[in-house]
Length: 139
Image: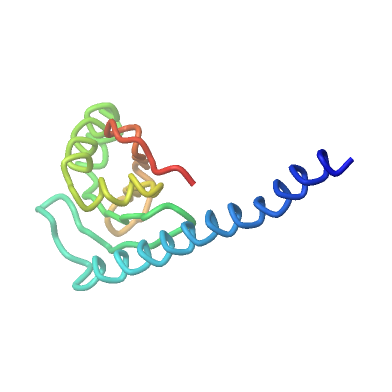
């Protein structure tokens, strides 16, 4: 009987520790994402170019969200060419070492595009580690 009890007891004791480790990783990622969002939002809104305005960053769970406003004519182009938007944005995200590090830790990069002034939705794009050929860290 003891032969069965010891392995079961060991397993039951180990489960809370692995859950705590995952919780600690989630907590650390959340803290890091909030810090990045705060630092990256300094000086916003700011023009990226004549068509694009960076409104700042927020965090929802594991997602770092970049809020971007685009002019109406640019918004229409984006709606007509969603794959081109994803490819161009993906290249930028995947070539950013800081974003790559966050995604390797399990973060998701989300880009929320709205029309300037009207705030009508234009597009939402999400990128995670696998989109950039990375393997997220195991919990």
